[in-house]
Length: 207
Image 1 (cartoon, rainbow, N blue to C red):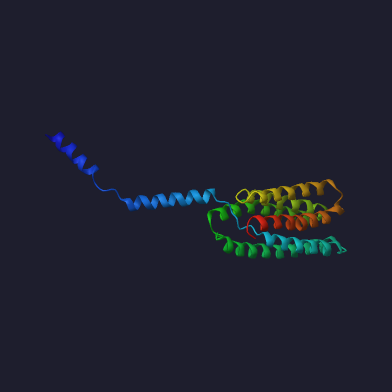
Image 2 (cartoon, rainbow, N blue to C red):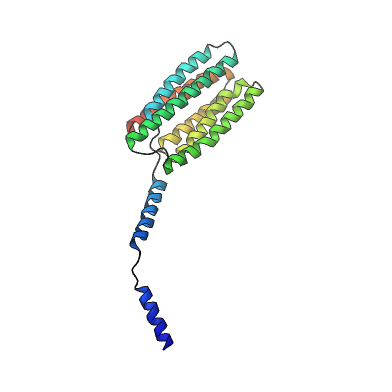
């Protein structure tokens, strides 16, 4: 008799209504996380990259006229600050156009991949400055920036990491050539590559 009552109680419990609302919320959250994992960061600025390239060409010309290595470094540091401001502003504007968010999952992954090589480049450059090794600053800047673009670009469209590898190739070439070619290769990479790849991104990926 007791066994029959227990079986009947279990049957009643299994017939209780399922909380559909809770399951729907869980499913929506799972779908959202899956979409974020599969979505690429598309707010990489094409037109902003072109403008960054133009300012880099101008910076390379100004840097080439400096009589001392310190003036060369100051010129490029000013260009870094200008290019960073242009990049952030252009990225914010494009994110509004393409309807993405700079705090979304793909954007965070892009930033987390981009930041470590860039921080490493800053640290190495400061170390080179301390020992006055100006002759290797250009290739170090190109290689570490390229590594940052490759790592961040793993969560973006395919053309972005390709650009990063091109920067790294330019940096390796700068190491192989005499030091006075460094400024020319800085113009070719930070200037020319930004313009070319920026135009490709602007044309194919919405600005």
